[in-house]
Amino acid sequence: MLSVNEHKKIKWQLDNIPESIKGKPRQNLRTTLKKKLHEHELISRFAPFEPYLYQQFFINRNTNAQTLHNIIEAVKNATSFTLDTESVCVYKKPNKPALIQLQIIQENLFSYIILIEVCHLPHPDEHTFKLIQRLFEYLFESSKNIYIWGSINELEKFSKFNLFSLDQIYLSNNINLQNRFKNYWHEHHPHQSTLLSTNNDISCICEQCLDIQLNNPWSLQDAVAYQLHKWLDKRYTCSTFDIGLDSTLFHRNSNELEHRNVMINYAVNDCLSMHQLLIDMQIIDNEQQAIELFQQPELITSIDHDSSFQIVAATSSTNIPSLQQYTRAPYDNILFDDDQEQRTSPQQRTILLNERQRELSNERQRKLSNERQWELSNTTTTLEQISDDDNELEQISDDENIPQTPQINLSHTIHSSNNPTNLAPLTIDEKRKIHNRSCTLKQRKKLYRHEFIRRGIDNRFSISQIKQILRAHKINFLAINKATSSTTNRTSLYIGIENRTLLSQAEHATRHLFTTAHYNEFRYQQRELHSNNYRHHHRSHK
Image 1 (tube, rainbow, N blue to C red):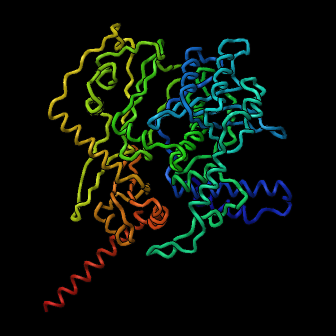
Image 2 (image 1 turned 90 degrees about the horizontal axis):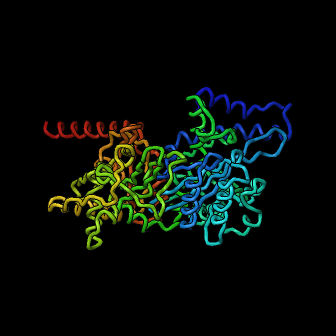
Image 3 (image 1 turned 30 degrees about the horizontal axis):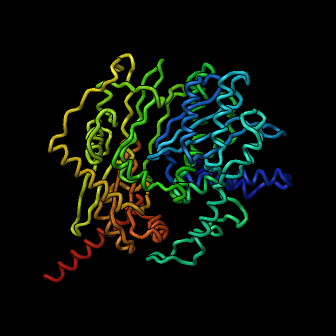
């Protein structure tokens, strides 16, 4: 984020470009300065983008065959993907292709992120190279939906690495999400002179009013900002993505590793943000996945015979589209084979429960058992129900307070027996608690089906005050959810709306509300009102 002086300096430079700079250099300088100001504006307005749960793998010359086999299986079994590429700028030459990012979208908002480092591939004669080619063969099948922010043509320059052919690219079922988003925005946000609100200063957010020309495409950053209300960091677009991001390729010091982690986050977030747009635009039907995530929290496991066993828990969120958590696992952690017996210890069974461990007679018992294990592992967010004088249910949770994923050492926890120990039956009290939790989650899903989020609000606003303010602005809400992160100490406000068509209106009506400045103004008005009432009461009794 720019300092005040830096911001003023860039604005001055933009308004005072020397006359000696002409033509394309002048245009490039003007574009660069505008981008810096735009980035500053987005940082100031929106919270940083946070992805859903994912697991990350690298593909390069160090990737073993077993890892590739498991990635291939994941590609074969999936139907939806996002894809992006990164290149390195070369002075007065075409950009050098460096990285392919592939997201394999799974159920329950989980996904695999594959980073293919084309500058560090194995030799074409090696078996692993053939496996990478096979991966792309399955990916480019007509039954696979590949979402790209732009044209599939950006893959053309990668064909020289012989991982796939041009014919495979053009015969694939690729979908330009950039074009689809432009049509989506045009349909959902037509031009309006004013919006119905007590505030008449609410601005229109059609393309023209956002200064996006009719024939110009949307940037991914702008789409994430205006649709998801998040800031997608694009400051590392011109990074050197060919230097080897995987820490196993070369020995690195701490500074080099930190620099690479920044580039990795930048690269994966392009795909992960497209995933959230697909869900928010309802291109991917996520309702059934949301139900599954509420009822059956899923544990994603990975194992490597030479390293530790890492369990990644998909925490039940109070609102599925706001589930914001992620993990990164080493590339050499591979998924279980379908035909490989999964062996677990008693410690693992306290957080991992599947059908092989407990074959219950009906679906309800399985749900109860899953919920119980989730509670025992302390990975479920605590939900608190409150109500005010109007008997409206409000539930407060800490969505952003993601529990740490346990890491279990194989040498101490993997047992040789394949027969898991039977778990104790549920008690009546446990069943009652699980039933109450299930009912609460179902009710929350209904109340927050259409919601918008205000991040970074002043935590001093009480629920009653928030509701009072929303009613004053004639915003018909179903439920309020206020969450404070213990990590960042930032408070987010989740507002459930009954009618989806009123979301945009409600978002604009509240865009300046619940800030620190608003709280100070609100308290001042309250004190003035109390003082006036006191003086009126005092005079009436004289």
